[in-house]
Amino acid sequence: MSYKLPIGRKLFMAVNIPLLLLISVLCIVPFVHLLAVSLSSNAAASAGEVKLWPIGFTFDAYRFLGQKAEFTRSLGVSLQRVALGTLINMFLVFITAYPLSKTIEHFRFRTVYVWFFAVTMFFGGGLIPTYMVVKETGLMNTIWALIIPGALNVWNTVMMLNFFRGIPRELEEAASIDGAGHWSVLWKVYLPVSLPSIATIGLFTIVGHWNSWFDGILYLNSPDKYPLQTYLSTLVTAINVKSITIDDLSALQNLSEKTLRTAQIFLGALPIMLVYPFLQSYFVKGITVGSVKE
Image (cartoon, rainbow, N blue to C red; front, side, top):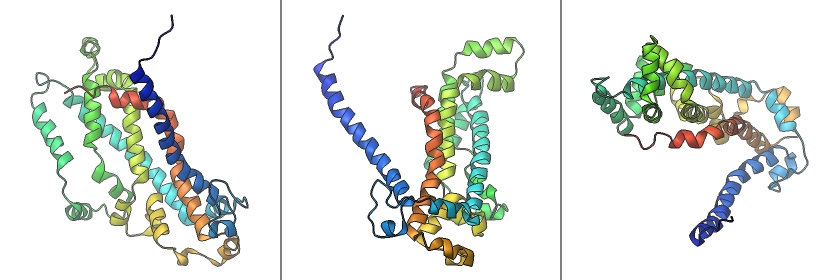
């Protein structure tokens, strides 16, 4: 038996599908343009002739970047920040969301703690007080200054506790009957069934750490300790002529400022573009599951 779509549904699809395709193209085109410019010759890039396809195809910009200590060092700092920051953020989200997901009967002061964390979502300490706290705690000019101030993301915690509240109580009760404590229930019962939410929050955390650049300028005094995005932001605003050595001059003859910048920006965005497709299957479910819980 054939099913006919209602006219309203047909109109919705007729408008929505082309609109989503257009938005997708608009999101992809800038990255395609960056890649094309980075793979083009000096003359074509400087003349602004490159659109969506390389002109005078060459890998010179990427070869040059592979030999630049500043770029590889900042890339290593970013990878270290993402690894440490994600582990710490996710661990704190888990151990905070678990008790907050309990009812008042099981956690007497739950409401007090919920409001304590909720206030931080609407009111912040401000830039100068935060800077003073980081300075007085001895975190300045260390990678921990990029991780500790935002170690617990309250929004992610709210998402996770809503997901935890949707887990059937029977699973926890069965584990408790077998002698499992709260730690065992969290790691062996709650987390294994929370993969969609974990993947979603993990993606948010990874992207947040990878794209963050302003805190590097605030808390790091040495450019040698800049993460990649902070390094790229300083590169886009001003060329560091002092970092160019005599050995670089011959390589720069076939390169331009534009090809180098586009190559570095593209490489900076590439890891996230590679990670996202693997988490996409969990993303929508992780956003919606538990969203109607109070």
